[in-house]
Amino acid sequence: MTEAELKTVIFQLLKQIAPDTEPSTLQSGDNIRDTLGIDSFDALQFLVALDEKLGIEIPEQDYGKTGTLEQLVAYVQSKMS
Amino acid sequence: MCERAFPNHLITKSTYNQIHIPMIEFRMPSLGADMEDGTLREWKVKPGDMVHRGDIIADVETMKGIIEIEVFDEGIVEQLLIKEDEKVPVGTVMALIAPSKAEVGVKTPAPEAKAPELHPIEEKMPAAAVSVPAHEGIRASPLAKRIAAENHLDLATVHGTGEGGAITREDVEKAIAERDIKLPPRAPVAAPPAVATDSIRMAVAAAMSKSNREIPHYYLDIAIDMSKALAWLAEANRQRPVQKRLLPVVLLIKAVARSLQEFPDLNALWDNGLQRKKDINIGFVVSLRTGGLVVPAIHHADKKTLDEIMEALNDLIPRARALKLRSSELSESTITLTNLGDGGADSVFGVIYPPQVAIVGFGGITEQPFAENGMLGVRPVLRATLAGDHRATDGLTGSRFLATLKKHLQQPETL
Image (tube, rainbow over all chains, first blue to last red; front, side, top):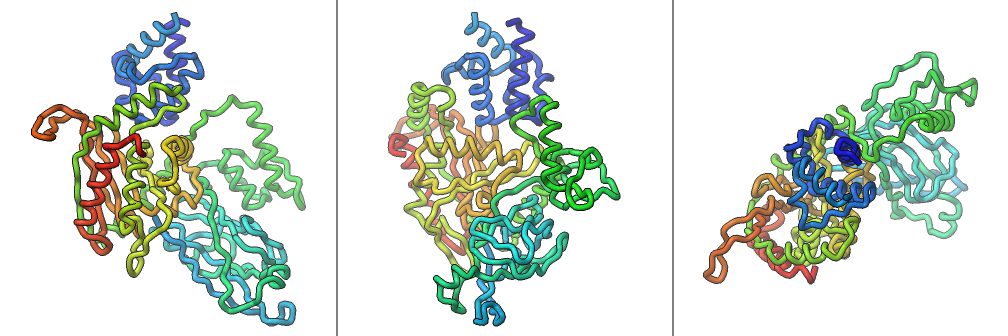
């Protein structure tokens, strides 16, 4: 999966969790939660959706490594490789 | 959160079976402290219809949307007293229901026999919340029109199979089903339309204004070291798949519920005096991203396990944000809990939702210098607050409640 394809999947999942946000406007360095205004509940639902879609389970201790779009993409790619 | 105001008045009708049978009065229910009236949108029954416990007999529109009203009794609809689209105050008799013969045969007709317990069961979007072209000359039932509007279906495209070609509910549902097959799947969570959130805003405004007018608040706060609770939670989540992970707020909800067992005066309503409530139903504040908030109840929170509370949140929060709650969830809270979560203010002092007598607030958990046993360290600290109704309790009760809450959060394994 290319970086662009992965971003598309991430945007789709975020849109499902928070339909009144515009994830596609996220910039690489943006903190996902802060920028979209999603709370801890939505963040957990996103992780569940990511696991179900890509089979990537992010442990709690790694949450800090996935804060920005850029970090999340890099983290998921490292797990998929 | 609110009480049901259903005066149990009964009348008798001498012509019914030649004896004096108490007639049941179906009244406009109260669905919240902020509700003064409601508009009957549709009768689901007609005179002569038999109604059973649990049947939905009317749709009523309030500031919080269109609510389906359920009747918890058996009988025959005798008379409909209110016309559709008529707005009437809470408590107005809307219909008369004759108790069923079977019930009368079993029960002794008596003046003190109780009126039916009415339960609104589902809240839906108000029809006005969506925009669909109106077509004059198209014959359709009010329910069919509403379902079409809610689903953005143009009635001009629907073939009516009812009397004289009128469009029925079944016609509309069939048309929606056929259309949806052709459309791509929709997002699982729907955002509430702007008009609905405007209505919610007004409902919040009414309730909070009433609170500030009538309730003499007192405020308390306490700092809680969350080291043990978060460590316990991290270990618990390490052993769980992501689908089963718990959020910190689950511990807070359970700790509040446990503490309320020891302070029943805070789990109560104020209505011409303190009315303690046996069930601990925690109203959990869910903010809408488009503004406003809704407060669904987590019923029997003290009896639920942490996993069950998490499951309740998984069920309630998405429905709350889509304004798809049942009215029992909106009207049976006995206390409110508001949780700001991470990244926001350190503390929140809430406004009590009348007729409740308390609201518990949690700020974000932040690392702060924390002194304990003569030692200074950096700890994850949570500020918990209580706003109490001074008519119902005093600051000492509130203070002891917060101390108990703190104690429970130092023993997360016991929650």
